[in-house]
Image 1 (spheres, rainbow, N blue to C red):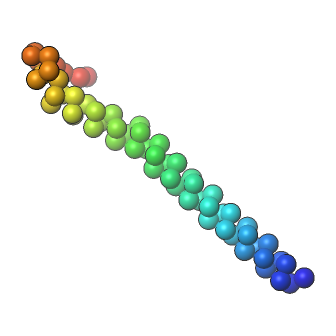
Image 2: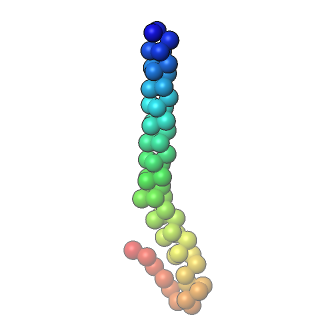
Image 3: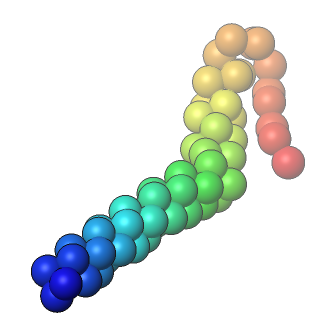
Length: 60
């Protein structure tokens, strides 16, 4: 009986670790998509668009 309780606690502990890992990965993915990606696209577009369009380009 004690072995069964320890086994169940071990499984629950593993699920908590997995859930925490999924939450952290999702949080990093979300933050990078909302904060890092727009900044990166803006800086790269401002550098490359004038060459392609042969005119000044700005992004607000």
